[in-house]
Every structure is written in structure tokens, then in C-alpha cells.
Amino acid sequence: MSSSLVLVANAGDSSISTFRVTDAGLDRLSVTPGTTGCSNFAVDAERGLVYASVKADDDNSDAGILTLSLDRETGVLTPQSRVSLPGGAMNYLSLTRDGSALLGAAYSGGYGIVCAVGDGGEVSTPSAEVRFPRLHSVLASADGRHAYFVSLETDLVAQFALGDDLALSPLDAPTAAAPAGSGPRHLAFSDDEQTVYVLTEFTGEVLRYHRDPSTGTLDLVDSTPAHDPSEKLRHSVIDEDPRKNHYVWGADIHLTDGVVWASERTASTLAALPIGADGSLAEPAGFVVTETQPRGFAVSPDRTLLVAAGEQSTTVSLYRIDGTDLHLQGRYETGRGANWVRFA
Image 1 (cartoon, rainbow, N blue to C red):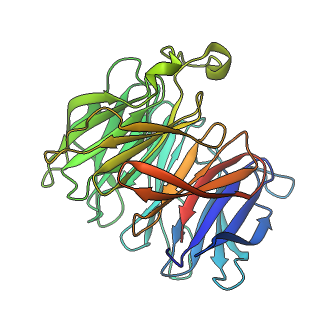
Image 2: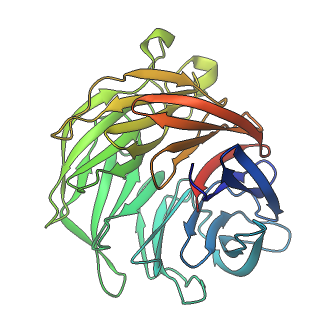
């Protein structure tokens, strides 16, 4: 097994758990409090820094991004600096350009940002800002030239060139459409970055886009269901309770060798969708019932392990990946409202 660390955001406890991956499973090293309402973070493993989205609290009237240093021996996270975000907390953070820039997407605030990151991890006020209703995720291409913001409410992926000055310039075309009412949520790149996969929240599909590496533009090719048909889930409706109405409730997406993994929260499943040589997806090879309401999960850098968290669970599950199969290695206490996982 990998000797890396795993970090889990426990939004209900306003804490982040740090685990060490061992041959026996996961060993919880520490639980760092004080990350108010944290539901996502980005990790710079090379510099030992974590950038956590936090909500307003008694000491801070605005939401913000908290920079913490990570002690890899003890797992303790120590606050270093904080930048305020008057427009509201981020729902998704990601790094680009070797950790020198941080991108964020805010669902309630309906805005996305790009911030410069200093050598010590200090996050600047945003150098660029874009606005789309209910943004849910953002990723940059590996070369840091293009950035993609996903808008759940308006069924689109907004696509931009990211300048040397961290300005955002719309591509031609400025957006790539998703099917009406699908609610695109999270995205992932193929290894060659010629395909972008987007998981929808309301229909539980993986949308496949062709990406032109030169221009950065996306074109929708097709879609593949990623929820268990035996559950007979219904098409979700925005602002209605998915669990109460037995609606599809897609959440997170990640890739391993030859497989797209996708989580669905109403039935609490992880789906394995085989990837064809041309980037196309087959229907799921199987479904694994995992932690209750799995909003977030992560795959180890060597793609041998998967850790899943559940919003209605206080434990995380560790799996060994074998093609399209997951083998449970153990479940481990983390905290309330666990909803974001990253390896470090």
C-alpha cells in the first residue's frame, strides 16, 4: 500500500482528520479543529500546505480560505494565514501552476475565483472573478493554460484561458452545454486531457466531452448513466429533497487506470465505468454500497486505493482497487458530516 496521508473534512465538526496509510489500513494521526464549516480543501503535498474553505464565525465576519501547514509526522494542521471572501465560501478548491495559483467555485455565492499563492502559502485576494449560478467545481488543465468552471443551475461548463497574470479570458466558445436539467457538478480529466468527464447531480450521468488541447474548447460527445438502475431513482429537481423523493443525487468523480468512478448519494453507491480506448464509457461494471451519502471520495496517486466519506456517516471506508472491483480494507472513525477526501 501507499505510505501517503489522507485528509478528510468533517463539516459537521468543523475539523479535518489526518490519517496515515499503512499496510494494516488507516491510522488516524490527528483531528484539527477550527476549520469552520469546512467542506472542501486543496492540498499542496510538495510544500506541505492545505488550503481550506471556511465559513464565517465569531472571529471572522466573512467566509474565507485558510492556509494551514501540514506536519507529516504528527498529521497536525497549523493555521498560517487567512484571506476573506465577502461573497461567500467556496464549495470547491483546486491548485494549478505548481501551487502558485488557487481556483475556487462558490455554489451559494454563484461566483468563481482565481487567486495567486505566495511562496509561504499566502492566498491573495482574487485576481479574477467570474459569475454563473450555483457553480460547483473548477479545474485547470495540467499546463495551467485553461480553466473550467461547472455551473449546476445553468447546465454548462464555462471555459477560459488563464493568463500569465491569472486573468480569465473566455474561450471561443465561452461555454460548453450540458443536457437541460442534468445539473453538471464535478469534472475530471482523462490522462491525455483530450477528454473531460463531468458527473451530473440530477440525472446521475457521466458526460463525455472532447477537449481540443490547443484551444482548450470542449464539445459534448455522449453520456453514460452512473447510478444503479435497480434502485429506480427518479430524475432530480433543483431545490427539492433528493432522499425524501428518491431522486438521483450524483456527487463526485475520479479516474483510475481504465475506469471512471462516480458516487451517488441517495443509494450511497460507487459506480465503476470502464473506459474504452477512444475515451468512451461502458455502462457500469458494478456498484458498491459505501458510506451513507458519499459526497466526496478520493483515489491514491498510485491508483491502488480509494477512500470514501459519507455526509451521514462518521466513518470513512478504505478500498483496494482491482480493475472495476473494490475490496473493502476497513472503516475508520473520522467525524460528523465527512464530505471531502484528499490524499497528501
